[in-house]
Length: 614
Figure 1: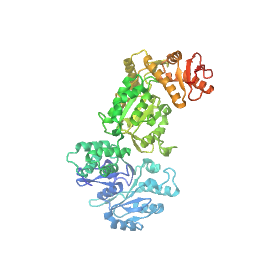
Figure 2: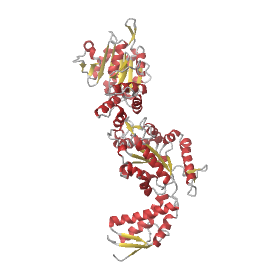
Figure 3: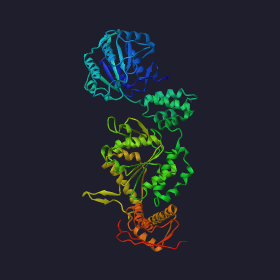
Figure 4: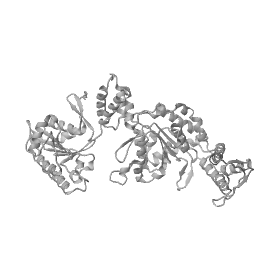
């Protein structure tokens, strides 16, 4: 696969070529399992790293390049040099068959010594999967310790010799290829001026663009004017490898998506879901969602309308740029406790999935410790739980199309909040195991009580807003407090910037709304009792007025406080009366009066008068 790209050479490769006359050993780490883009005349080719190294080293002037790994042993990197390389192998005491000479650790050590001390034309050895030669970098066996000690000593003894016409300095170069920096013994690489460590990064925008252009041009019926689609392809593959881009192009061909739908192939490749569930959502259900949600989130007209706007934007994609694969939707729900923030999240989940329990919920008060981020993304290598993965990353990998609720986000440690930068900006989170998990199909909801209270100079907690304030004042003050918290207290204004104007402020539960919530909850309790046990309960006007007075005298805890009062003054005494009276299914009862007063868990009073059976 070729394409005119001019003089493109990766920075790491330029670094390697520059230091070949100066260093005898190199350690390559990082993106070593990807395809590597290299120039070939006026075009470019992609090759695996060993083949790329072989081509560059031979072009620099090395006569032969060998590769070694623990499974195959020594092998030829360039099939066109098979005969010459096999001759070299035999001179080194190896027995090659079809370009492969099996070798264990002892034979590798002996051959390594011969290569380093070779006096013929310059040669190079690429030790692939070098980290698999040892069990643990800091706990070597005697054989492993002897091998790397020999390599260490030879790195200091090696001297360059002139070769060629005109002559230039050459070592018999040794290149160790590892996945991570710490895969080699520290005493071999750290502070060793004779060993050059070169990290290989993931392909940057320029390299991805060059490779993506050749991929698109090779697809059938590719139009000449393809700049916009090419740009979208490159932008949406940020962080992916060249081998991933090749797989995406293959997926596009196999599933017959067509040239113009290559961005859809990127989405499928990232999340592993063929269908786009957002396009299958019943839009009529969303259109009628306002009435449905208002029955559950009573009195929060502003919040419901704003949230539905975000949902519609997520479904249609209008104004939601897909560059970098940002989440489908993000909402930050703020306001007093018990006003319906969590209930709104459940309602949206029910609207999208038909099941309010389908959302993924995290109580952020459980993540207040500094290192609790390991629960979300997984422990790093070497720590307990590394093989288990993280709760968040595992959940998104299993259900990429989901509503993710982070409840009471202000209680999380600031280190946890830093993880959301990656999620909100690029729609991706790297787990402790180094795996990339994509949030491109997720709808993310944060809830918070920020802005309701603040701590004064004396350390006392003071209310910032009260039910006596107008909603406009409440919304303004809460947004100001949230901005101050992220900008001044946490010193993380970038998180707030990524949330943008999707901060939805809830109003207090006011008296008229509290009446509606009270009636809805009481009716729900009685309806559930009739449906589950067949017992019909009627509450007299006097009893309901008494109950209303007990439940609505304090609205500081919102709808949740009303529910708690109903449980205390109605549900608990009613259930005790039904149980103690051994009331059977089909009974019709009337609650005449409800007495309040100093009611405790052990001393509840309720007058329950039975009517004649109908």
